[in-house]
Image (cartoon, rainbow over all chains, first blue to last red; front, side, top):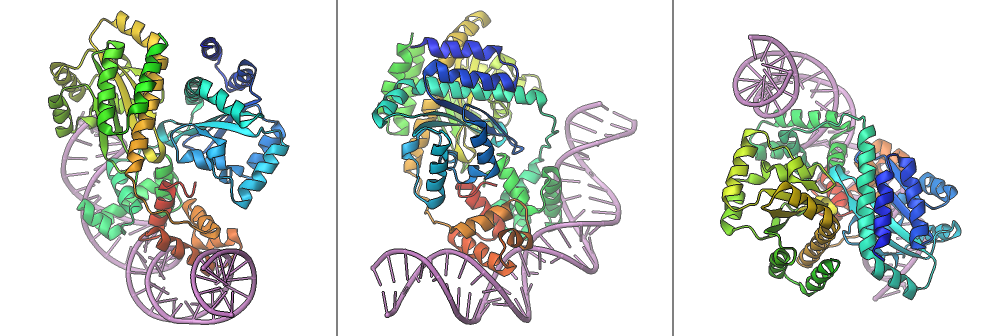
Length: 237
Length: 237
DNA sequence: TTTCAACTCCCCCAAAATAGCGAGGGAGGA
DNA sequence: TCCTCCCTCGCTATTTTGGGGGAGTTGAAA
């Protein structure tokens, strides 16, 4: 069934707004005869965006309760590269279990398959197929369509980034090489004094870099600056 | 020609070492009748790895001269998500031009198409197809095989990460819920006092969590602890 | 040419974090 | 039962950071 992915790409090419992207994802549901598809993304500024077929109530509830911090799908995929079947995830833990029940009540199917996608500047997105069926049927579906799903995830994210870039108004500040060096060393656990020594500069100069980086990142303190720089992929410790 | 990607995946499944991955990439060259394929990756520890068909001399020269810092392909792809034809990149600039001449002398073809791929913890990889031909022929090839190339890039990176993960020995310490809460709030830029307030505990108690987390993570200070917890996906700020 | 951003260095002092010593109650496993 | 881990709280002294002043060089872009 090569035509479905082609159909999808043809439809995708017509898309120019986030609303249309939402409609496209809803259309996927019909195309593949799968109950739910979810694309959701968190960009470097921490602004979330989603195009999905779940009920509005469930989405509101999810955001309201900040379920992103306990959802095993999100937590599990964040550290993975390869697509993951929900059965492989860690659903033990009280929070995860009660989350699962709530999700189930809200119409989320028992089977899921999620693909993590990452863009520049620490952007992270998930593309999920969700359905209600037996384990065997689900394995059959996923085995048959992994490649389609990977490509759809890729193209969806590409389009989402494309649309967002148009509307992206935050003049994002680039950190200078020295600022990055300083943040990296501090993030590796060195004190200002030691970090300065490593860079062969005075402790004061290092402090200037940290302060400047903090200012550019809008961080409240050094720890925050390191966390923001890491989250946006600017530094790796 | 759906069979080629299937052939590739079949071959990939036999791969268990980095040497075999190298051989697989060389094989791609024959499979698609393209002069060069390059997969190269930089993991979170900053260790590079590459599987490619360029000459050893060129690779050595490239590494020796630290061309990764001026190569327009690397620089351009680092800020992009979508695959990019080399013609779209910025080849102006003295350094880029002389790099291009050197590459050309070393047997690198005039046409290129590169796909950026990103994994967890800031891992970044590039998959490139390189050939010598006319612009028209190249557009024809890329148009026809984008999907194959995207999938190959994805699977190559998946395999590379899989092989690498086998060799990673990071000791896994579990942080308690309160420790995670504390680290998360601190990572979001709160001071100890405010974080304690948010958790409705005394500032002292919060301090104990941070210290305990620091100890478990083997971190030198709070900033380091937050950085380590983020890098290992334990917290999301 | 001017301008601007990045890089480098110095002072002082208040605020915050770290390091050391404690304590006790509750939940769960050996 | 005992032991261990988690959660909670207090005190004091020392070290590290943060915020406020400055000032000079270099190199690239406008």
